[in-house]
Length: 196
Ligand code: GLN
Image 1 (cartoon, rainbow, N blue to C red):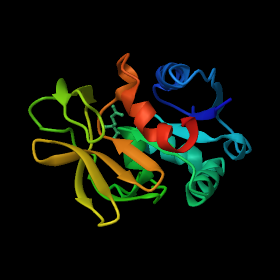
Image 2: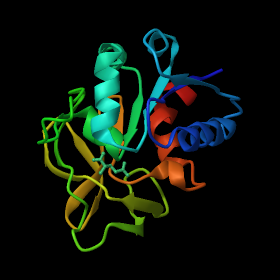
Image 3: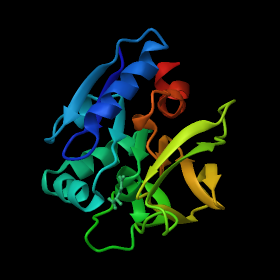
Image 4: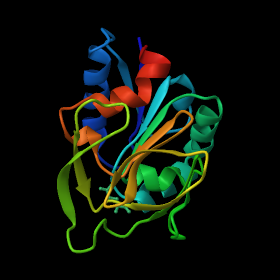
C-alpha cells in the first residue's frame, strides 16, 4: 500500500488526497493518505504532496514545525514529491519574496505574480510530456517560472513559460491537477517510481 503524505498546514489538502487515491486506484493500490501538520509524519511516507494555497503561510508553518528539514531529507533520499502552484513556490530555490522560506528542492526561480496579469484564473488544454492527450490545466493566480536550472526538465509550457517541470523525484506544476478528476499528473509524478 502506498503511503502518501499531504502537507496539510494550509491549502487544498482534501483535493490532493482524493487525487492520489484516484491515481493509486488505477494501479489497484488503495493508498493510505496521511495529513502532515507536525514533524514525524514525513519519514513514514513513500510520496509527498505539497498543495496549492498561500505560499507564505505554508512555508512559515513548515519552517516553524521542523517539517521543512524532513521534506528536504525525503527528496534527498530520491522519494517523489508533487508540488502544485503555491507548493511549487515553496519547493523552489528562489521565490523572489522574503516572506517565503523556500525548501530549495527544485532549482527554479519563480515569480509569485499572477500568471498573465490581465487574467487571474483560467483553464487551458495543456500538452504535457509523457501524456497522450492534453491535460485540463486549471491556473489560479498561478506562479510564473522564469528560470530553470539545466538539471530541470520542462514537461509543459504555456505562453512560452514553463508550467510543469521535473527534477529527479520532484514534479511541480503552476496549475492545479488536484482540481480536476484527471489523475494523470499525479500518476506521472509517482508512477515510474512507486506505483509501478
Ligand atoms: N499566488 C499564491 C501564492 O503565492 C498561489 C496561488 C495558488 O496556489 N492557487 O501562494
